[in-house]
Length: 513
Image (cartoon, rainbow, N blue to C red):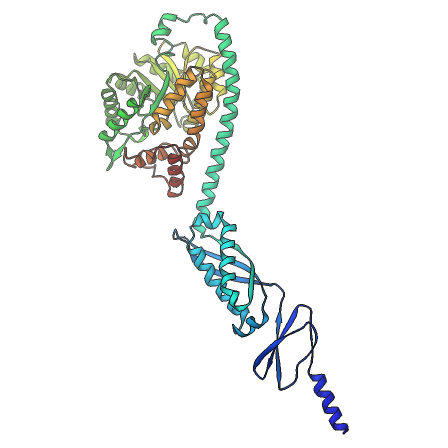
């Protein structure tokens, strides 16, 4: 009897189980599900019953990194985390062998499938939408197992090293572009105030001593009338290594047809530095003949050697140009006295009006306003192309002398007109001549609100056209428009693809494509 009592007590004690608050027990009696027990103390009869414990807490499951090829063929590694819990312990037990493993495998395949249907930009920018899509799909697929997927988060997208470098370069270019926009906007607001003051002074002050008003009006003295408005610094198209005169002719006709005020041949934008001497002269000659008096033409004739500048200026002048664009000597880095002597020597050698070209970013030396004043005393030095990077230089020059001023910086052109410049020699007008010409006309007519609207519309394009050294981007843009071939001469090379995409986007925004 005692033995029976001991055996019974053992059986009863061995059948007792304790389930915690977050646990449930699925009971199988003779192989069939008989119900769910728990939490607390439950009885599971030996031999007859078996119990499978199921945890009802939220499971945090890491999805290992997956190799994914996006819709736009970019290979990336992506990992994620899935949050789920068991709602129906019976289904989680009898419908799937191991719901943890099954959910993990399903999450991996779903992650690859969903991300493979997304392009890279969506993957990086629409993370919440992708997370929601993954959660919805996984929740639907695991519902028959009694599983509720509450959240899916894509944790990390591991980009290829090459793409990381491309994105870093794009970000840097965008920061530079925004900095230029902010700087130019501040310059413009300040220049509007200066323009108002200038207008009042012009009404109340007499002309400066020694200014011949008759010569001023017909454009043979200071050039204020003649060299005015929007001038295009023409690119020099190439095809198979040679100058493409057919494309150059088309470009000239487009410029004149869309209202540009003047043309510049063989400047920095025209890759004069890599043209042979005979090519240089032929490009200028062709431009003058194609323009046929419809608009004035300036011919580039500056070198870093004064004697060579003098010789080239004589030859270019003989081609019938309306003036010479003479750059400051590059590489030599002359003193201010040397600069004045250089330009005076060139001016003495030719009968053509001289436009002095100040572009320290390319030449390494800047002409001081006081030196400009000395040069303005020469009757044939009538204008300066000012590309010093600051609108304040226009005011500094105007306070010292009466010389024509054409802006040489597209991003500052309107601001410099507001402070007294007479127009711009523009790179951007190669692709948007009508807009640049209209902006200059409005600005020179003191209608700055309307001019500013055009300037604001052009600014993304202006930034994009200087993402790489000029004329690399503008030639790429003209090629996109089907006007020229995208061909340059070494050491210049075609625009990088990552930056080209940004340029194309800016051109579409500007309505040029």
